[in-house]
Amino acid sequence: MTNEEKERRIEISDVEEVRGILKAIADFLKDIREPIKDLLDTLMGSLRGYVLGEDVANFYKKLKEAGIDDNKAYELTRQYLSKRMLTTELIDRLLSGIGRRLS
Image 1 (cartoon, one colour):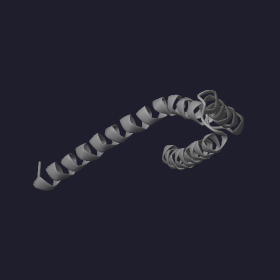
Image 2: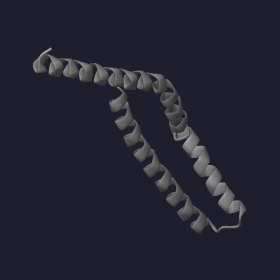
Image 3: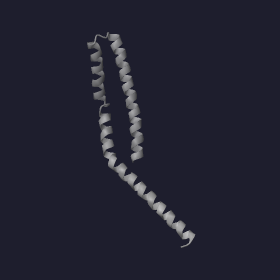
Image 4: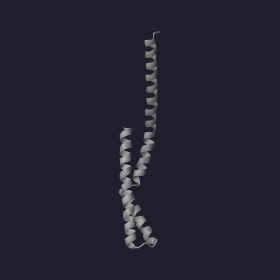
């Protein structure tokens, strides 16, 4: 066997090894796609409008029950909603990026 033939066999072996690795990765991604989708759907469900509205209302209610005055409770609730909306935006960006990579 010539050196050229040996090099050719090594190249073919390397290609087959890379092909096997990529197949394993592809299979793994297919296996985790649905669980990740379910997890993200659950997470996003908690950020939907009606759930978020109830959460913010409960936050305000708890502040009032704790004796916080109206102005302070209003301001804290505005800040809380603002942070939740920012979180929603960041999660949306994250999910979009993940979705593009899994597609």
